Image (cartoon, rainbow, N blue to C red; front, side, top):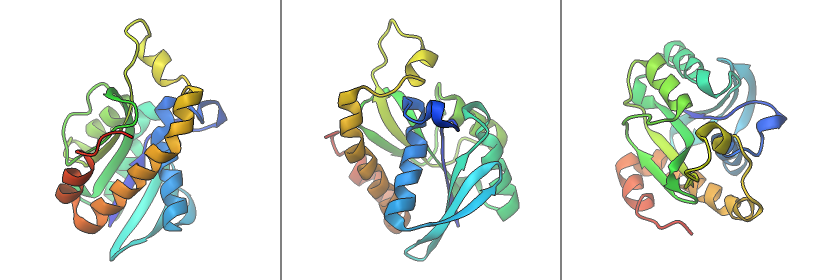
Length: 190
């Protein structure tokens, strides 16, 4: 089984924030893959289904961003998964808007949700799909930028970006992360 954790903040206040693009990708996966809602568990909204022969759980933590690792840790423990079977989707202001990057592991960087997952999983060896929301203006504080809404122009482009993220995730599940990374990380942002 693979558990994919989309990072974001619960509630309508944060719905359209840059920081919530992980939630939006999960919502798009649920719709595109016709996954079933399984209610609330592991401090998260849970959806599940099958991609190819792979059982997949999609999770939207309801703990707020800085505590996202609680969901990952509970899923890991309950299903006795390994760290590489827990995946994360989150925003990255160091990547240009519209770009997507798959990684098999690595540092969480400045992202507090990914940092929480790293701390509570005791490892940074979990796969990551980062969605570019940058660049952050040098005059704007990080919190202010990530908690702001996308511009009207960005919002108009977001469906295509999210669609590419959903396809990249599906490829990762079907053909494996290395091949999907080679395919999707080299594709220029549209």
